Image (cartoon, rainbow, N blue to C red; front, side):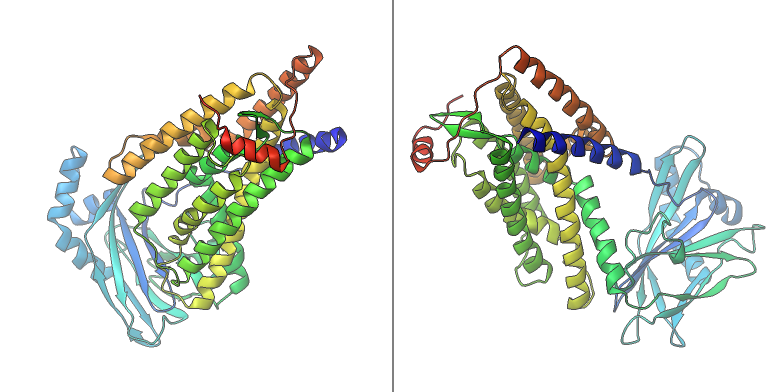
Length: 460
């Protein structure tokens, strides 16, 4: 069994190194000079957003965009009608020989400070009135802002989302096949939206599922709080190290499997609108509650040695949180089902990565005298974070909890940190073993032990 664990340990470090190596940060699409149109395509609707840089608005339209941010926003708001009129003149969309009506909404702004340049844009959302039965596969788009007033201007149209064609979150222009360049020589183009591609929809949805785990700290923390006691057994009123690598791995497998089954059930049913979703406020609050409840269970077990019950029960609500990602899509059931399946696979892969990079660290420390402290301090910290989230979500206030948590779970920083901690844990484990100070492992698998455990919850 030691040989098996040694191989698992080596594999863990290799995977962590690979995860950290493949990370690459994305560069935003805006370059502070071009105008942009972002299109969000579904089977029966077409919406989007047009972005104009402040510099062009000053030079070509005489906007007074100086002073504080509040003063610049006030200037834009006061001239919103002018911006709508300008957009109507310089953006048109047609399909199947029918020109569609575009309705523009209330403007917003993008104000960012880049080390090399200042990025300032006015952003205007719009809806296209599709009068054909479905969105045509080919769109005739004219987009020529500032071409007459400013020499050598360029503009871009990006297909940000097109579920049928498997294009998602392309606002950064990663998929160059869905980026179209407009100039004074080519102010109009025919944009092919692409044929329905279920395989690409599926594979891209996997990527989105992975990204949701990477950017969803509450789901990561729920998995982590369940992992803390996974290398232990509750026996005679206290947590004790689980006996052997196999037993610990089996406990983790049960927890992960039940969480997967639970959130897959509600994720699929809610995503297909078979199960009605509660409000996002309720769902997100219960997800935060699940972390706090699991953390308190670690301190005073309610279901000793049956943490999989907690994983299953609260996993149902986590599935509803995942389902909110696709529930509002205006696509066919078949397209939605493919996306649901792909996202679910991506979520499972992300969850397995979290387990994989954390389990070895926890297993190495489980027989050391430090682990009871790690269990208690970690559980209390997670309970406090979850409580802060509950307050934020219930009362719609920002206490800065996400900003704080993301500093610790942000990829690839978290993977590198866990790799370092795992190496340190290995060194500490072998040091304690050489000094004969490891805690004896326990086997509490008998029915008698489980019944005893339930009668004698630990006190803290």
